[in-house]
Image 1 (cartoon, rainbow, N blue to C red):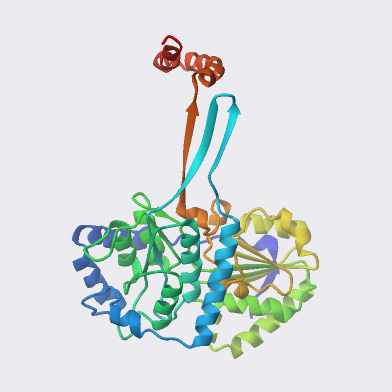
Image 2: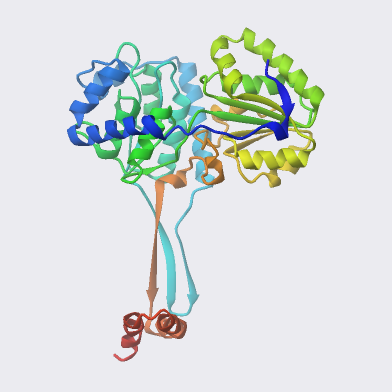
Length: 419
């Protein structure tokens, strides 16, 4: 199904999703929303969301009527709690200590006051993505979290999204999608309150809009289509490997799915499985398009070169399908999330094993981490000194002030010894 070729023949050439005409168009949209508020949002909603909602905020009646099966609600609650517990364990906290007598220094950790979560929609609904972002924001202690998500074909926010929002403690939701939603949350409108941080996955237009507002509000990171890279030594069942590649490819035709293996026989076996599983998949046409344009099966001469490629590529999702995945983990420097062994499919991470599934793509894992509760926090440092403490630190500070040619700095320290 996919040509099998040597690893060294593959060139990493990711297409930017936030440049050129896409970015220019999205910047124009968010600028218009900034200027005209709700009127602009309604116009873009009619054009892009095919929505004629006069009031794009979810009404009390919609909140009350949203129902989903009890079994699904229980699953969402359990997923939310696992994600929240994971983030609680990694939360940055206040600290204070005394490096010298009479000197106290520390950090206050302060959450953003309002966070905006974007969850894509249209062809599908993603309550799991809402859980991922909201759990992190709630653990961080953000007082207010709002949701923007595209309406369905009826112009309504899907009931499962509203039910999930209730579980996540979200009281305000808006049936708005695309770049106009990002602009509304970044700058505020008559209806949508301005947020201090905007997070969440989305298509190229959402990503470009996030770049356009990044100078005015905090964002999580820029991301493109989903990615998976499976690193295999040939010891894991080929059907497992193929299933992971197929699963990520069903997101959309721009998804990227790569296999890097040290076994040529394994490469061929996975390729056969790919063809079989793709033909049997309900979203076969999407999967075939993704694999045809952004899929590759690559044979590495050894594990060393395979690992080196992984770190250059910096995938969103990395599966270590090897006999000893924990031995390889310390050698992985750049990846959004790593899945160890035959029984850790990426899909289990998508649905709440604990770590966040909102992850950097397009090589951004070389520079960014996935979404955590800490993304919703700012740190404010403080220091308190007694006169004796100042005298202890003064000699080094005075020497540096003189070396840097800043006499007023030096004087601001010296004057306190003269009183």
